[in-house]
Image (cartoon, rainbow, N blue to C red; front, side):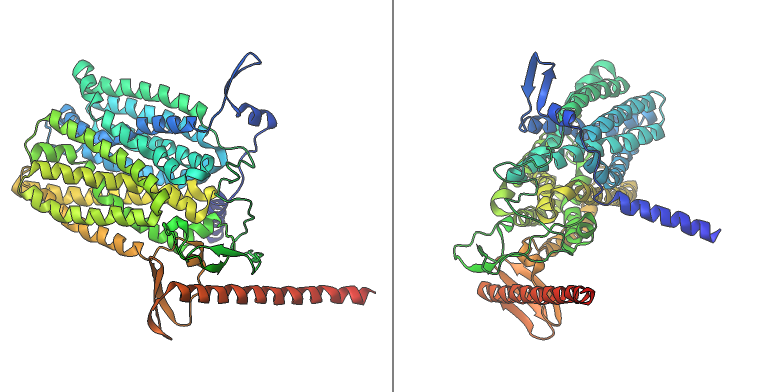
Length: 571
């Protein structure tokens, strides 16, 4: 029995290793590659050539449909009323958290699948699941069974949204290596647009045909729209370049595996840049000769195990937890704390989606100019200020200030999603974007599920004694979110964004080091606390590269001598 269990365990571990490896997908035939050159082709009579910019529009439409999920809070009271006859029952919001949890699990698993099979299949499967989710929700409302809503929307929509979300993102990163930040923002901006539109649209449908029929109609409309976009999407052909740049953003360069890199770069090859490269937003006026860093291409396993990925995971979680938890309750807060009507609450949710959309595109575009890390510093720092002030504003029931702070916070929340795909591409390459992006989105799910459950438990406990109109039921939840965001801000300092910074050699007894703009703060047992100037860093780096190259040449010479021995013996 134990041997059988061991064999099954080994088979599972082998499957996991194979699944999360760089196994190539199905190779397209010459005919398929030829067809991909055209958007529409009807024999030899009519054709429209494919243009990569079409995918910007298509991506926005995909995200627009699945982004309707963000407006779920407008359904909370109507669903609770339809099933329980009581708007304040508080069961419908659980659907949101289930969807978030399933979303994260699906993105974790689907990244390698989409990398192998392409975005078309991902959107196709996702669209069917998303439509079925709406139809099952309609059935759950009709038969007044909340678990069917949980199962229908929570499970099926969670899977469908995940597949439709990451498929366009990974594809656009490959098509636009010259505009990584912009393509990253545009590929997810539709999510914010969806929450704007569907904060209002369902109310008119519900008033006309009822709550259950609303989900039937939307399910069919979403399926029709998404199937068209699935047809339009495709990955670039083999050897694709734009302006001489491949999908990894490399120009006429050869990349090597980190373990196999032989640093073939000549010691006479210089780079006129600072120790922090442009991906970190640094533009150095002083032109200093720095020996070029070896080109590195990470495997998926190396990417997921790297220090940078682990740090980004927790940074991303801290950046989104407040926005995610508050979005699901925003409509309730506007009505219960500030005594506004449903129409006003719906308007607030819609405009909030606009700021979500703005943050995704603005911060993604800005990250191309000043760097991904700098943008995260802006979003997280401003978020810390906002959530520190918010309890005072809620307690004073200052509605204008509350709305302003929530909308700005939501822009920062959207910015986290707009920046992250390009950030992952910069660090780990385009081949790892789907998988690393899928895994990092589980942080969003954890923040939604764990944060949502904790929020609900605290909320329900306080409501019993204080009632739904007491500001304290929300303020107490904000208090525990503040330290989570603060920790993510601290961790951001330790992310090494440039190849030079990541490969910079540790000294003897080094405890930690972080880059602060162009300087380096380093603590070691041998030298204590140091604040290294840029010139000192370059000096240490060049020494490291020179010694590494000399060592490689020495080892190469030893290998050549070893190979010569059997040849002489044969003679």
